[in-house]
Length: 544
Image (cartoon, rainbow, N blue to C red; front, side):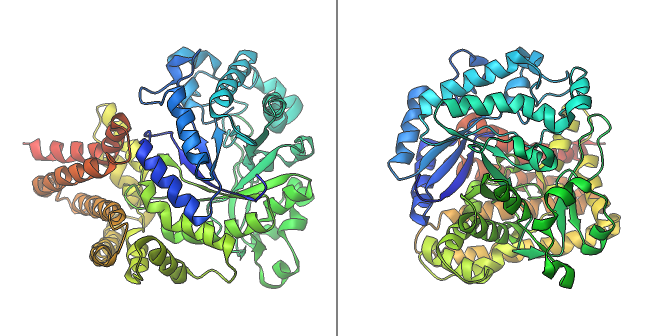
């Protein structure tokens, strides 16, 4: 790939996308100047020697190869991604492969000292390479290995080599294998940045992907330090410090950061006005002789299930893309399926990343939305920016992590309601404050809905995309009204009306999402969106 990498992430951790939707996505991406997709495989591949991994809706080898050809015919290179250590629940989360875990209770991470696990990973990679025929890159994951070191066999190695040394012991043979196959391995940069002493040991053929989904400007008043926070007593892994101010930094004892990163993170302007360069890690890795691709997010942690937090993602994608395509080897827009809002709603921020690459000028949110509506909808729709801003504001009861916790309670036979309401009260500082905040958000969602209806009437093309925005906004309204009723103690009385709305919206979601997702994956999305709320409402409705 001679041009700099500009990729979009197709995450198959949740539903399998239909062929038609994948091709529609490819056409849009190529039209905006993207030249690659990161194909996160997870269980959406039929592994010949390990069929237990494959999801029932995984495409066949022939279908997968056909999809790759469809992307390539549009000028988009397909970069496969398969996790090699953490986030591996699609393999070690299955009973057949539980013996490859670092510890029995860690259902998402391989044992870094298991030769059998490493051999299996390489076997999976070889089959993926044979079918997808990547031309330059293979992404091996390697991020957020927070349980690394928890296993009893790992502890002596950590005492001798440190967590970074244990990480490298597992990862280096995998990186070397991919390189011997004629490809450049890509790894997420966070764990290497958390253990900077291992940076010199990373082979120069490796491409580091520096992801940061919170940065919203080239400079900012807060500094994050990978591996600078509290120590996990189980493993010794240090958490990331977020939003460290200049005053706090002066009191922060972190010799590793000062040795490896300070000259990139602190400059003369920092000392004058307290702001930090926001992409210091990219510069530090490049300073160590490594190629770096930056990564932003169109949907990530903190999003509501209905609508992603575009107020965060838009500047993040814009500035990250400008950094990666200017100073680095390229940029990737990630789109994490575990957040459950539909990828159609991430199109404006993906467009912003592409525009950052091709135009100069400062970040102009309204200007980006105007350019998006002209390009995508074929009309100037100024109210679309306001609609997105109002609809995208999340609250805890509407986030995927809260709904997952509530669903877990439901599966254990418990009442899901505390799992939905307690995080909201905790964040807002009590029930009364939560109700006041939620009332403000609810009014914004209702206003957003009217603006989206007006936008749909103006759209000259792709108006159907706005049906996904309306569905997400209606879901925000449902969650808000449910939570307001629960906070006021009116859930039993309002249960019949809320259940009727829920049933109607579920059918809207089913109809819309069936255009993009295969049936089993669609069923999973419906279950997360609606089952915890429905169970709560039916309990109250049926109570004597």
